[in-house]
Image (tube, rainbow, N blue to C red; front, side, top):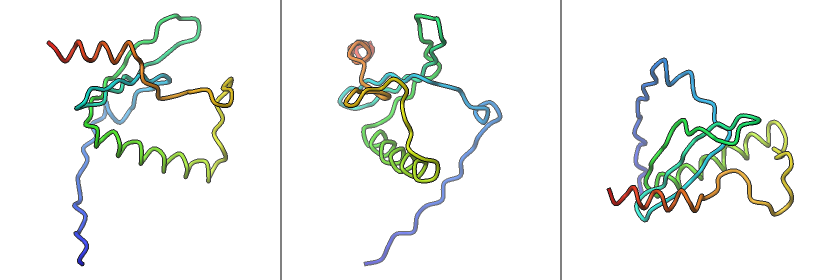
Amino acid sequence: MQKKAQQQIQIELDEKAAQGTYSNFVLTGNTPSEFILDFARMLPGLKKARVLSRIVMTPQSAKSLLMVLTRTVEQYEKNYGKITIQGAKAGTQIGFQADPAGAKLNKEEKKH
């Protein structure tokens, strides 16, 4: 069986995108056909987080993202040591979590 040659994709990165956006808080939601990632920033002393970017992707793309993030974190920890989350207790969910309110909101948005 022959292996298919991987297609090269050219990526264009404009100056604004190259600067990046700092996010320290992510909300997730999904519908049967898409995953929604809201990247936000929380500042100390404030009771509100501001969503800076919403990414909507297919379930297949979300699964691919999960796989590449898993590999990237594993490689990072191999090179630099285990990542610890301050204040996290064993068995506590942290990081990327589904937001039930956001999931409901996403379903309502879908109706419009």
